[in-house]
Length: 489
Image (tube, rainbow, N blue to C red; front, side):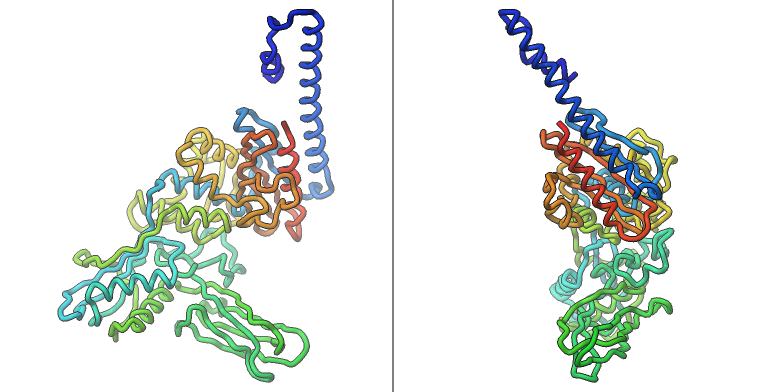
């Protein structure tokens, strides 16, 4: 095909003399040789990377497909099954756009029961969770303002959270218990707030006294046990965690902090985040001057309840956030939104995965050839291939041109933002790679799109696993592979 395209630029009918024809043929042969040389050189570089000592004990699955030319550029162990880590989010977000639609909105709604007379709600307030992963304290204040604007100045009842949209499994299958209390392993509920985590600001106090601790947002939901000490010199050894072993929300602070230490922050996840949400709501209601003396608890919304307000969030920023910063909670909420949107409550991971399976079927592959158990890739049980990821990327490019620009834009850009912000900055592939990263112990993945120097769009997947220690070498190999493919004509 390459030879034919080059030849058609100068058809033989335009050559008036034999010398011109000879020059034409020479040009074609030289171009063909140059092309072959580029391919051979690229192949040699890839082979050199894959034959290093690193791969004596680890494995790689690779696929590079030229979407513009509609041809395979390179593949290696592309059918081999790997733990994808956060490359699993490609499947989840792709299914989200496809089956929820571009106009889908996550909703958090507030209702009341009973009658409102003389600004007194003689009934209960219900807040219904709709899997919004980006809901914050600021959004909660907006809902409380709407309650106040509806004319309610006193609640003569209780505040209930309706979390019936989801089952009671607060973690994904195969998640590691040692990930608790990290924020990336947030507890799951349909009623989320502040990423189901709390931020803890800390700094030195007076010498001999505890470190100064502040919760963001300020709340009385947590008990704080502070046994830390401020010292005049030495090394800061302060440790901040949550009493996750006993499954409660006591914040534990220990160790030393020097008096010259700068104020800093850390975060921990929250056990039973629905009650965290309700407690923050109660505090916001009181701060807004609405009288309330009842209790907070969870309960399913009764049919006769009347809607006050519904807070809505478009799916596009949720998917972008999921892929750009690799947000596990967002991916899990998308998976359950898929289930809730098309099946009866409660939404489960298993029901959501049916839609991921449908996406795989649309690519022409068999979902039974893979194992998918969550939406985020945090589980070690997931098993997929570079071929599958490449086929999904190809499917969006060829079959979904209307959604493709948004899907493409949701990925981190090399050297610019998201989880690729600090990668390929000095590379020729700088700003040319839009791809999803993935990292768990012994696993590093990179899959997405690459624009080469000829302007061709490439769909690719590089899955590397079974290495010990840092993933730095695996990431370096991924970056080098991207640069090699970028250089191909």
